Picture 1: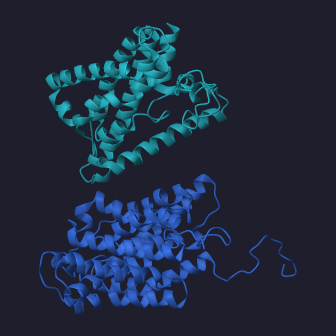
Picture 2: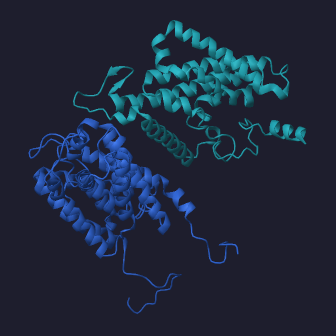
Length: 310
Length: 242
């Protein structure tokens, strides 16, 4: 085989990156968060994660079997979707929530639009929002063996004070994967080090979120308030792992900055003025919907066409 | 009698206003939160559609071509007002449930579409039954969508609890996004049945719509006998403008 020349059209120079390799890196980068979630919430968290991944992978496999397409579960994208969805669920959910969420994420959001690369929204986040709208009381019940009561963000919204140190370490209630800022940042460093993501989107997202939060909250520069907002909720997980999703982010560099600023703006609005304490997932899927528009307006000019008129 | 049957079949199956023509989406998506609302909306529209088709067909030779749309609207609006008062008087609960969507039947594009493309060119009896057929097709579609949404979103159908106690209603289905999910799924199933029928060699052109294309993909260039888009009327006005 090795003696055969491969005849193909361009491009002729190829990187070693493949979809499955990238997705596997993302899974590895999510492992610190996953293990911290299991440590924080107990064995039930592991069960929820396993169930969600099984549901997404099985859905993709069965769908492709039924419609007679080549199986694509080998690219691990379904695993990433399942893992991200599980990390966005509270630990107390009944067993059928991960199953419905997984089926919705893969079947409705991903496969019906044509599979990986064609989905217009992040499947994991779309499924989370679907579950959040459908089963509001179940999805916002963060009581478990380890913690009871409101999440830090909800407490912050109610005007109570929170322990920022605990929020950075992660000893707080919340969804399985969003609690520990440290674990998420370790994962993000792995991704940046491997060149899977760059800081363009997460950086603009977080910075603009802080700016708009200071503007909207009416508290001026309150260090404790701002850092609690940064460490709390899904902001870190969303900024590093979901807003940077290759399929649903803008391709152009200028577009990525606009996208990041827009996400920060929406998240700040949702968190300050919204009825719910959290708004990262809605902000990112609304951002996803605007990506085609952003790309349209930031399309670089082809060489020789247009440009500044002297 | 044959034309009556053909018109009814056309409205319910061949050119079902919701699943094939995809007309009147506003009430379809908005009021189908339960099977009862869907059925109520469908039947109200059917009555208006049948009566306005009949009157427009009667007056088709009197109405001048230039003012035909305002004339149609006046006729349709009269019947909608009658229906609104009747509903308010005799079915107040349905009246409350449908709310603003009853007066909005005036601008329902199924009614104006049938007036323009069928009733204004055909005799009274076929027009009346065209209206009834289209109305039944619309009612059928709305009831189906409403039933699916009600079962999934509330665990009930026509107000009767049918799902087991342990079933947790998926409340997104009684909200706006649910309408899109259910409509898309039912349309897909309907197309699947058509495609399966075609494979078996049945003459699906009768169900399709006369031409090789679906009415949806039709750019209105004609060739199709029932012409939802009235190409000739458009040409005439253009000519007059010139």
